[in-house]
Image (cartoon, rainbow, N blue to C red; front, side, top):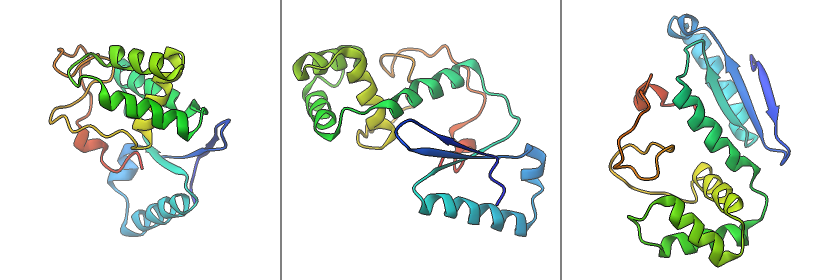
Length: 164
């Protein structure tokens, strides 16, 4: 296997990182592709996220989105508190700004706002909160209809299969 880095978080979850130059990935032989798939399957069977990275730079906005989402990995209040937050969020007006919805859910459940935000991020990362918007969601903006100031470097299609 060619895993370059295994990150272990305080909750004992892991992320395996495979780093290769973009050119090497594009020119990989069938055997090299098969080996990468075996590596991916190995980590998946152990419930470890597998990430393939290259030297392609990310914009500051993309990096901010990743950091924003990774904060959700620190959720440790338990399933009951998460279910209460998600249940209350589902009762809030869907067109209200998400900050207001999360603030109301935090108040109703007795959590501080930061913990409610972390719960929401955790739910998104673990696909416990799924929203069908029909448009791209920019996580740094409170509502999808607000114009984005982030210029995408890569299309969503080019990320397919990278974060698994």
